[in-house]
Length: 173
Image (spheres, rainbow, N blue to C red):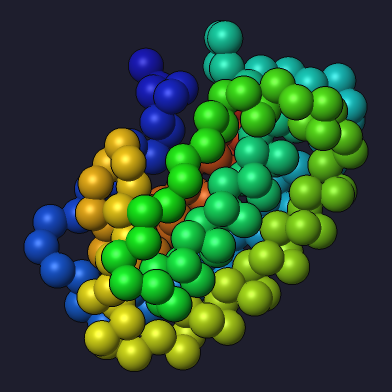
């Protein structure tokens, strides 16, 4: 049976990522907004309001979540690049998904995601090797290196896009 929680599996990476690996992750982050837009382009409102799994978020909530999460990731990157090992603030993503802005048309978050990613990619493409070694502290996850954070967010976009595309495939939309 397909894993509805993690359709592409959990993010894992052993060792230190090479320059080529990081470049691949950056490419995945760059491609995510267009892939998300493509995944949802033909969905009707009733389909957008369908949960991708039992007791999961709706497709609409997933789209808004990706924008929320990637805005936070962009800001965390900037904090890590401009401060010495900053402690970042986590957020309650499940609570954010319940706020009224999660019922807005998805076009708002698609455009927001595209804009955030344009800025994010400019920074990511200019990172020098020393910058990839910089870290921040997540109160729950501990010390995170920028190079691995890039990988986690390359995975994150693909993970949620797969929630949507696997639902579309399962329901034959």
